[in-house]
Image 1: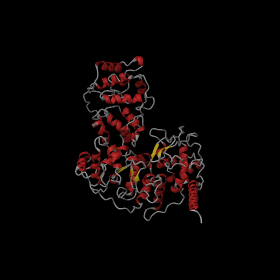
Image 2: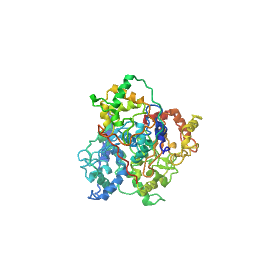
Image 3: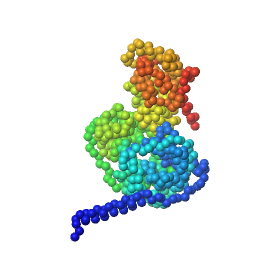
Image 4: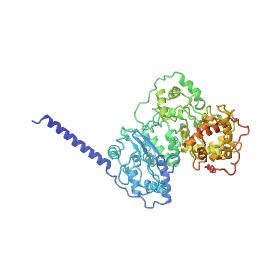
Length: 430
Length: 208
């Protein structure tokens, strides 16, 4: 008869073997190279290719991470705060020593398609190759041509400041095994109804270059995009803004037409309200440059997203009594209307307002505290601005006003507490 | 345009005449080039005040020119000067620096560039009267500490570096104690032979 000790030893050995096999499988899955795709051209100096690349660089919003405010274009250095630490956008100018001047078109494709540097090293997915993997080789070649046409800037990359263990780059192999597959070139099939070509172009732009899911799709606890909840809306990684659902739900794109969505993307404002916070930056830096056709394509894709099967939020008792209505009357009604109906082109209605009805009130709180202009675009070159109220309203005032707004005129959303406002002030300007 | 500017006038006062406390300066009547450059500086990180940076983050240069032009054309009345604690000696020293400078420190007088009436000139040189002492002190201090800058050449940084702490206090005391004359407007052109080279704001692009 075998001794109990030997039995424990055997079980342990079996578990160890299983663990080693799992790790090996994860390593293999996370590091196996993607199938190469041949370059679409060898003439990277062609003006038409460079021009197309410039358009694509706008749509992909490369500058959002690779250009600092007032800095040289694409020379890197912009801080990207995440729950795992702060990453810094890299220098993607054609400088040979500090930028990507030594990269081949294949190297560039590998970075976008497979999230790897030229030496095979794994890239942190703050660089959204999880989305860019869907780009065609024609489009990565155009981007490559555009970037190498830009002025070279000598500026060494600032090292990332990630906490242990996230600073251990080899661990990305296991992250990739769980959260990333390089895309295969098979276009998704359109649903019944919309024009197939338009929808497919929209899917390509939304899920690829536009990398909309990176903010609008919730993430799992390891920071991977949740495949079971595409575009369902979520707090941004550090909790400073909420990215609304792009599906047809309350506090999402319910009631938005193709024309509304296309107008928001290109003009930054619509009769329903305008873009605020990070989306205002996206409109200003990127989506205002969409051609009307591409904006319509994205909008067509979005309005055909399926609404998830979840119940509508139920209103929660407003604990502020008449305070909210009083403060609203005092501070808000002269512009937004007694019944939240808005006024003219400058003051959006709050009845039916998307921002007002988000599951998390952080956006609405920040709009009240920080104010803000709609983005200035070619279609809306002189936007109206909401004044900041951070010094004029207490946490209780803001909570009372928002609870009133979120539960009046047909709006349905949970009430807001002074504590919610206090937390949001940490992210707001001081 | 006043309706579009509510986000500005909420703090800077109606028509940009200044806010209720000392930290939201008058912007009305300042030269348009100067105002434009300050908007750019806030947006692009040469001046640091996050509430301003957040408001300006997604506004294009063309609109910043429009905003600057709008406030440069507003001329609401000035309030009477502040009465902050000072001494005759301090005011005397302030007046000396204002109109004679300090040759020992190679410090040009303020009036050399800002004009004998300290009203500034278009397009880029601001007037110095009608501002609260807290604001003036904060700005000169920020320039000395490097948190307020302009793109190079930053002439004010050079001047302020030569200013001793007691002199800085004297200058702000004297300026904030002056009443503002009724016809206080920037001159049409800067004085000839400025002693230092300054960053000049770019002219607005021609509107199509």
